[in-house]
Length: 100
Image 1 (cartoon, rainbow, N blue to C red):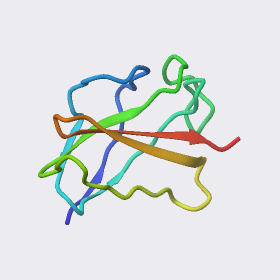
Image 2 (image 1 turned 60 degrees about the vertical axis):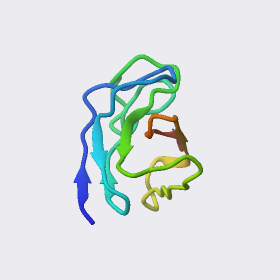
Image 3 (image 1 turned 30 degrees about the vertical axis):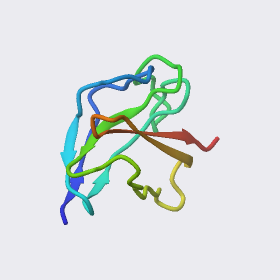
Image 4 (image 1 turned 180 degrees about the vertical axis):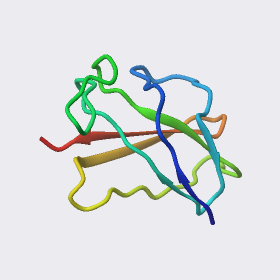
């Protein structure tokens, strides 16, 4: 199992078949950041347009339809609610709603 430190260079504000930003194996850990619904990062700086920006997608090697993936946030982080979606291509999109 590998730990990946991923720094987003852009965010998506629409669901779709975006190219993966990172390919990972089952059991890997991804440490990354996200922005709030207004596009502001943890330092309250505007990082991207608003509209619920999303970090990713991450491609999970070997993922099959119906598989479940675990995602968690670090206690005390701004994220209070997370979600993940999977397309038939095997691509995963991760999102979070920041705590105010």
